Length: 223
Image (tube, rainbow, N blue to C red; front, side, top):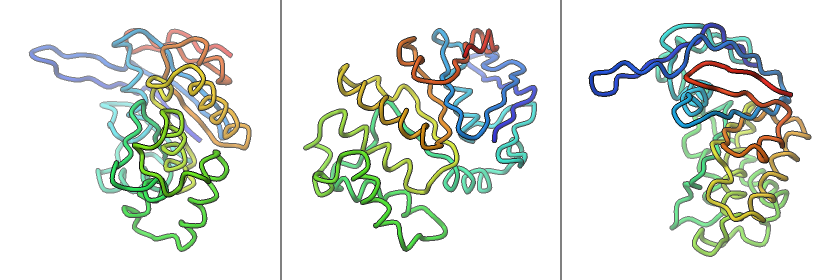
C-alpha cells in the first residue's frame, strides 16, 4: 500500500536548516499496524504528515496505492487525503455545537462526491464503537474516551485505506486509553491499515511493528 524510498524533508527554523527526515525507506502493506516512536525532534510528526499528504518531501518517492503522490499539487493531494486517509489526533477536534452524529458526518461536507448512505454508515459506526446511545449528545456531554471514539468514527466515515493516529491516547486516563487501544486493535484485526505515533512503549506493543526514529533517520524496525 505504501512505499517510501529515499524520502527526506527539511525545515527552516530561524537561520538554521533542520533536517527532519533523512533518506527514509519504508514499506507498509494493507492490514499492517505500525507504531512510530522516537525522542522529541526525531521526526515522528513529520513522517506522519508526509504519510498523510499534509507535507511534501523535499526528495524521494512516496507511492500510495501504487500511485506516486510525492509530487501531487495541493488540490490533488487534498483529494487523495479526503478520500483515502483518515486522521485521529491527541485533541479530538470535535465541534462543540454539533451533535456526535453531526460531527461524525463532517467529512461528507467536504467530499466532492456525496455518499447517500453516509448517515446510515455513521450510525453503524457509532453503534460499532459503543456510542449508539450518545448520537444526539454534544461533545461537552461525553467523557474523554467517548470523545476519542467519536473522533475515530469520524475518521472512518469515508472508509479510508489508511488510518493515521497521532498520540491518540495522550489526553486520556488509563482506562479510556485501554478502551481506545482495544478499538484500534479491533479495527486492525478487521483489516484496517494503521500507523500510530506514540511515546509510550506499552502502547506501541499494540502494533505489529514499531519503527524507531532518531535524528530523522530510521534507527530500527522491531516486530
